[in-house]
Image (cartoon, rainbow, N blue to C red; front, side):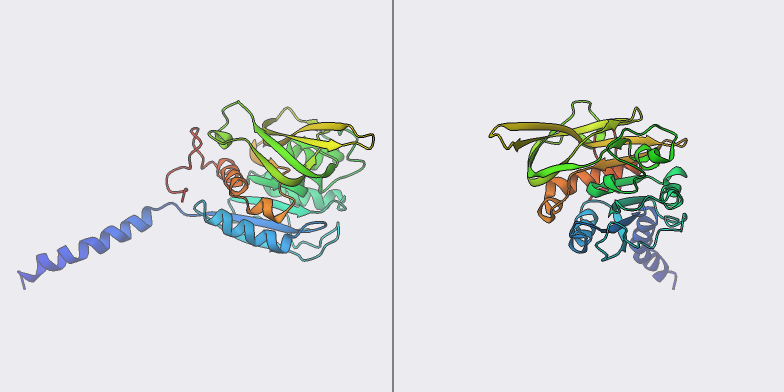
Amino acid sequence: MKQLLPCLIALSLPWLSVTASAADAPKPLKVLLITGGCCHDYAAQKDILKAGLEARANLVVDQVHTDDKSVKPPLSIYGNPTYAKGYDIVIHDECAAGISDQAVIEGVLAPHLDGIPGVNLHCAMHSYRIGNPGEAVTTGTPRSLWFEYLGLQSSGHGPQKPIEITFASNGHPVIKGLSNWTTINEELYNNIQIFPSAQALANGKQVVPQKDGTEKINDYVVSWVNNYGPKKTRVFSTTIGHNNDTVKDARYLDFVTRGILWAAGKLGDDGKPAEGYGK
């Protein structure tokens, strides 16, 4: 029996090592993805995003989705200001341009005001608007609620044409090492104003033919980060992402993944995921 004891101990060591390693491994980020509403193929895009993001980082995406195509999608988060409890980050990819009720908007913002980071894609920028979105809002007013969270106010977009994306030279971790690229036909969102709390990451340039045969070049910020509220909650946004083929694009998914990791505090200053959060 004395001779068997060292052998049993030796055999158990690899199992103990594996168990300890699993216990020490970082837990996946818990991500809540919200989709639904007007004008986009959210039924497909929600699954494209889930698969693409989970393949790129140590995270798990849960979904809140409605197939409703109206500008007032009946999302289950409305009226529930604790909808993000237990999550590390929320991705807003809904298109709710017709929802203007202040109490509903404050409920959507409640988790972010409390410190839960946010990521906002495409039509999220044109959601939860009070009054005329084309008129610059004043901070601290009901009209500014959603725009202050985003860090940028936009009111509309031009035609679907390719967008030439140029990343800023400010060395921000989200864009460090990324190469400029040109999208397929996409919508370029305008900029009414950018708030002092926000920092631009990328501009988009789009050539738009005019009726008189000339061309107009529109140039707007298409991605930025923001520090929101008294807790300086991290928020990442990009207005790119109308069409399924853009959302499938590896460059787009890489970019959004970096935004998620940065917002969640899991991206180093060198632009690389924190240990245990890359794939």
